[in-house]
Image (cartoon, rainbow, N blue to C red):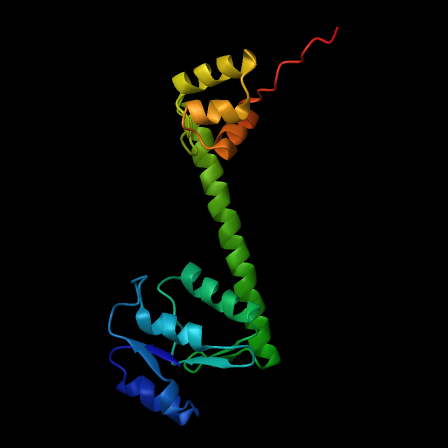
Length: 186
């Protein structure tokens, strides 16, 4: 069980539903906070075959995406979920249907988020701004690195000389489309 303050009404309902007093978890902080020690302890305690019982859905998640993430994680871990107020129980066919709908909603939310991000990046690009992660290696340094590699230096020596991790160098060279010059054979 998981609840937030005030908990008297919630505790009574949960114990009446058969939840052991020793397994009641709560937080005094707002449900809108990410760092909820009681919720974390509750979720860490749960194992496959257990059932998480909450008094009401909004006591568990700070938002619909957060609630969906928690419920999806429970399903993946083989943990059933039950909300007393909404009468949702994933151990029943009706509850399993609702659980599946939650999964579909979560997938839909991820798709909408990705669509919004891609539209924002396209709009920024049309305005001459480039979105995404900034380059790890500065353009001037990259020009010097490419010149050194084109003159025959090894990637290992260039990594040491320019203090760039070899994996970062390799990834950046791949991203810009650089390939080693072909050596002429006599």
